[in-house]
Length: 240
Image (cartoon, rainbow, N blue to C red; front, side, top):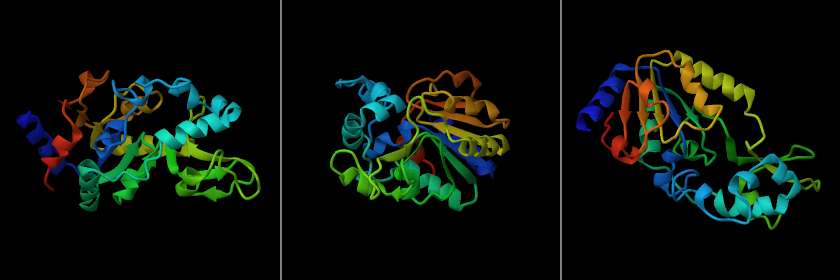
């Protein structure tokens, strides 16, 4: 493991166009539960399966039930960035990290003060009235009782990508562009099983593809370096 960490450090030093692609595992060490691990949200028991609750159809037809789950399980306002978020900010300030592509909706990268963040699945911090498109912040939504309503009477919807909804095309295009141009791609804290986000790895043309995850992924055989350990342990050993 020590040799792998040293190789990781060496590659960072050699690279000036690094892109970080992260999943739920980036935020678990801040205390935010992931979805697919044995203790994740998808393995807990609810009135409806989380995959059903977090679908567009369910939001439209069972809006109050949706918000009951959303407010109790996806409110990340109280959580703070961890060592991985902090180290990525340092990398960005040194001009090495060009972009973060994230599957997370918790906003912790921005809270840590990363500047270039592409949020594939949206963010809890952006919420819009479905009627007049007026913007509302996360505090308004999470503090509301029942279904959050706009001043015009319309229902407010979080700007997060639900099941059955497509990803924002501009965000996808920007993610593809930065990955294509990167000389080093760090993929961390993701099982790489969620499509289409997982397919973005195929656009990388560089020679330093690093996968950091506790468990193996379907793309391990494509990586130039695989580190099966927690992100906190890995990034705490990186000094810039």
